[in-house]
Length: 93
Image (cartoon, rainbow, N blue to C red):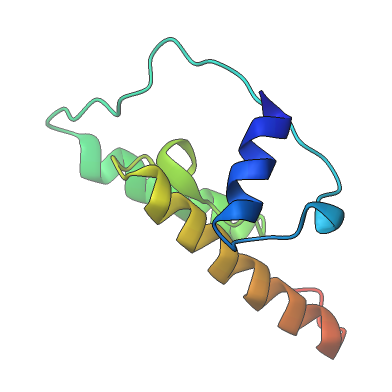
């Protein structure tokens, strides 16, 4: 399955197969965020805790948001660009 995903992303012009270092695909039984009355408080606390540790939360499961795959890919590419720019400065943050 991973090779098909990489091939599709390459076909769409989103990456080059030669740039892919690792892939992993899995199936998740419960794929939807559960919105309860305390959702916003819990999410804000979780995201703040991750940010303190220097963890970049990304995607449906990382940010606890219901977003489409194209949005996840777009945000991942944006994060990759930011991380590459930061790496050039030598700043570990």
